[in-house]
Amino acid sequence: MKLLDNKIAIVTGAARGIGEAIAVKLAEHGAHIAFTYVSEGSADKAAALVTKLEGMGVKAKAWRSNAGNFAESEAFVNDVVKEFGTVDVCINNAGISKDNLLLRMTPEQWDEVMEVNLKSVFNMTKQVIRPMMKARKGSIVNMSSIIGIRGNAGQSSYAASKAGIIGFTKSMAHELGSRNVRVNAIAPGFVETDMTHYLQEGEAAKAFLAKIPLGRFGSAEEIGNTTLFLASDMSSYITGQVLSTCGGLNI
Image (tube, rainbow, N blue to C red):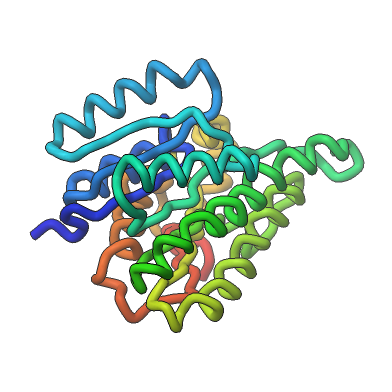
């Protein structure tokens, strides 16, 4: 049974890592995929992902679009609706980190993290709720982080942006529930991606693993599984929640 058969799903920041794994997982369950990437250097990876998704029997298209820019987000969602007809699922996955101690952090570093991680969720949600409210159905999944719940030294900007996503998620669940549009968040723990490669070796890895009850880093596919659950009708009575997918790190 395919949980998202013929649904239209948007995934931001899907050219690699967790976003790519999410796009593949949703496509496995029948969703047609519209996804974004930002840098010109990711164009080849985006094209390869389109080919992979189409090989799974779904429609797929990539847009070079910055979710942190309101005008670009508006144009992107308008294009998706024209191309695919509607939007059933929106995965707000785009994100970056610019880790630094606050004493050394520049205003520019702070602003960049807020724009990509938090403002992008506002931008995309504001656009996709129009077709969703009209259809009186939809699922929005926002990618937060366990750091947004726990905090972490040297990651104040990242933690603040991810905590902001949680507050935004809960508020949107209140606003959109009467239209049967669900809004939830995922708080991944330490996941094996390019962004966390420096944590996976040597003493740093041992220190982090010691804090995780399951004793290992998560995989991007496991975040994809959680996303699939929240995107599908398997979670039809769940909204405004934060699902920590962290190996028990948040216990």
